[in-house]
Length: 111
Image (tube, rainbow, N blue to C red; front, top):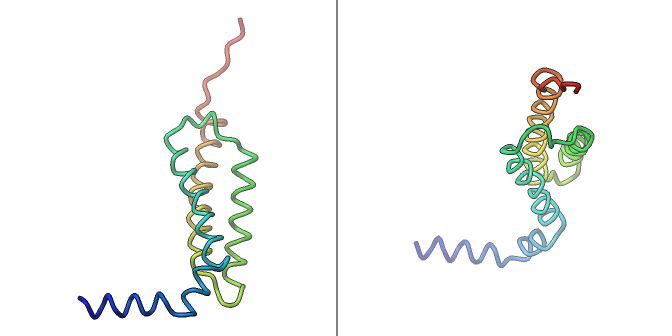
């Protein structure tokens, strides 16, 4: 166990690790996980409060950045994972919004 710990600490203190953990290749995707967490929290809310235009914009945003994460060299797998998760969450939210607005919305009664 001590050998494993020593190997891990030596690897983390290397110049390559410092360059990665102090770059936007790490901190950018880490910050973007906030979108995923917020989307997951919103799953418990009523679909009537979901903003269709905002959710659509987030779907497009994540789709574009998934392509970017795949095409950039070196490939940014952390960014790809983050935006794949966000795309999944936002598409789920958008389907909830569409289902509510067009299939389940209670009919408004006129007085």
